[in-house]
Image 1: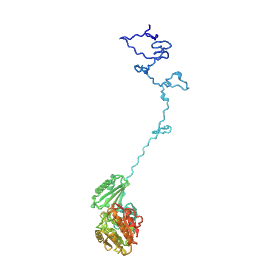
Image 2: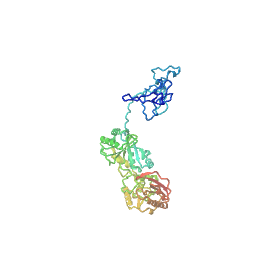
Image 3: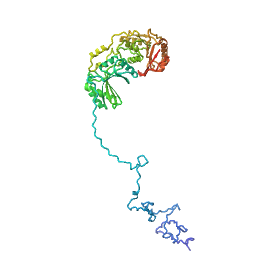
Image 4: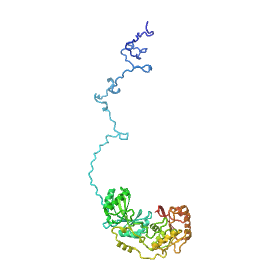
Length: 525
């Protein structure tokens, strides 16, 4: 009787006893033919099949719970399966080309990709690229010679003059300088340039009414750095202008230059002057030496005036927010005043406009009663200067019979101070100061003239909201009682002009005055 019914083809298998070598678990086979777990071939049967049938790997998904051991992985070939060397000889078709040599690598026949430009996806043509020629060394060039400084002439003659003026009034000062006969006059930002010797420096300080200062250009030189500035400052002939016993003050400005630190420039020039000539340095000195460095060109100038020229020497009392005499003279010139017509100032303060007008009418030199800084320079000839002053001082002449200067103000202290200034200037016989308000203003007897006013602006004096009524009252008074007169008013805002009810043409350019911008408005009444 068979051991396993229904399976006559399977022999009986003995059970494994203790001590025997354990058998490996039987792997499930899938034959090409037959029916059974191992299948059966055409050439025989048995547990392992026929000898010619290859073994198949077990399918681990057939029984997940059963662990199946994997056979060792065969060594992989280094050749690609699709390479000609991996294919059998029978599959190779002749192409008429010689076969590759055995020792030749496959990569040698492959074309290398063309290089690409940096940052581009397009290749760079190898044919267009050319080797760069080797750089040839530049021939050695001799160093440029150091330019010599532009020193003044041997006798110390100035190389140029500059008359300072408030910005906006340069054309007016240019007209005055031309009228006085100065040479090569040309308006520049901040003043007027001219030429002349030391006698012209004396004349400019004595006769120019609108200039704030008279600067004398002594020389210039190039300076690219502070060490070069120090070297050339020591070579400058300071002995032609400065005296060892007169202290000076050095100031500097730098613009568009490699030397940008004005303080360092001042220190180098002060050290050079002190060590070469022994001139003392004093921050309060009236004699000023100015260094201007622009585009690496250092220009040395000297302030020949000392104190500003608007200080005529007779005006001791100064009112609140008073206008400078030099600016007042330029405004009078803009209004066409020539000293032959009466002048009225209903808000005179310390009497700037009446006193300047009286000085013009009397033909007095604006600098006749004061001292200047050029008197302390080396080589100054006091006797020649005294003779020069006598020569240019006009003889005593009577002013035009039609001239008279009138000033009024509601402040009694201002009237007393203006009268005292007129006494010191010797112009009291040409000026009349009275105390009254604008509403009590009366027209003087005689021909029409010029009403010149510098009223409050509301910036430093007075409340601007309350000034509209003052301007309106002044406009009504001028319109009613001063027909035929001309009016010139200096103020900051057009809103203060409108309440006056007078049709003013467009005003003049803005002029800096006390931190504000003022304009001159003129009209014919």
